Length: 402
Ligand code: PLP
Image 1 (cartoon, rainbow, N blue to C red):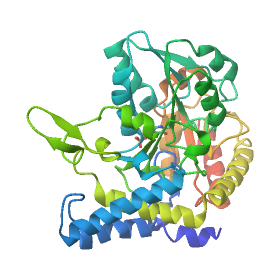
Image 2: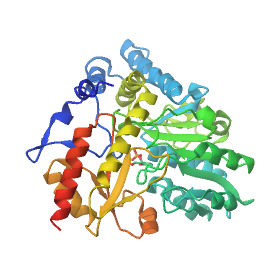
Image 3: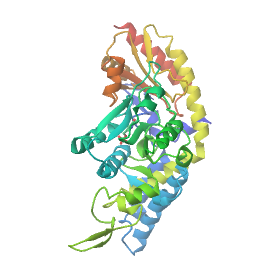
Image 4: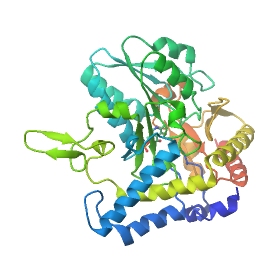
């Protein structure tokens, strides 16, 4: 990878922050957007803006073609079996809520859902909301000290009442890449479907939903170099066909009378209302961009950045890194001595470094480690060794102020 050339795709990376060159290390929260994706948004507004799926006129067909082309690109990107299994959403959160609402309808009082202690709130709260309606209990896979899951405990959580497993592919805090393929096989032996939260994994590694054999996979475009407000949910066709629509409205119907409505075929049954067709079209460009770089090359580059950054950060006196799994994505969450994560983050910002602080939408995981927050540096292929060196020097400098 020619990183200098790649960085030219991202004008924002050339910005100054507080008079210092920006070092953007908040990629797990949202990635930056290459110029080609911004151009695709611009082109949609300038040339093809018309509502999709309902117009016979040329503009509408052009917009529809772009949306449906992205559906096919997303299908190929995650290797889904058919485009009927690719539903556009607002993001991972909406994908999970869709399943919680719709599959949740089929659950009963006393049912159980298995989640893990490292889940993002968006893979906890939708199940709790469902639990309030249906008296469903969450069973939680513990996290071990190194940030991996206790897989023996996982096996023991299954009961006759288990209806779903909902697990993240990669932790947004610990970076741990969970052995989801094995965990899915275990769940299937118990006859239980699995939803995978792919918000963190999809931008960083090749995902093959058929190989994983997951039943649902949710992801967000804004973490994948794409636009905000768009995502996708993969679902196995036989499950989606049995599920009721998530929302009602235009686009998701076949016929409507005041007595009775029949629903559109998949995937439209789950896409009520006007979608973010501009964003979806631009997501297609982001997928082209990722394919051009190559997901394996991205994974390799980020793995190398992670190894270098980890080694260098351990030079900082008082450094504690949370999450030391062998199989780990390019995320380093840490605390230095007892320095508050917000204080560290604010001072780093003064020096031009964008990092995340606080609970990272994973309060149960913070409780597991007995802290209220951590500082998180999360890397993308466009980050450099020089940025890591500068970051380590800045963390040392800030730490010495306390
Ligand atoms: N799951 C994980 C693991 C995440 O890291 C995030 C976002 O940070 C989400 C879910 C929610 O994603 P979104 O806000 O794009 O819906």
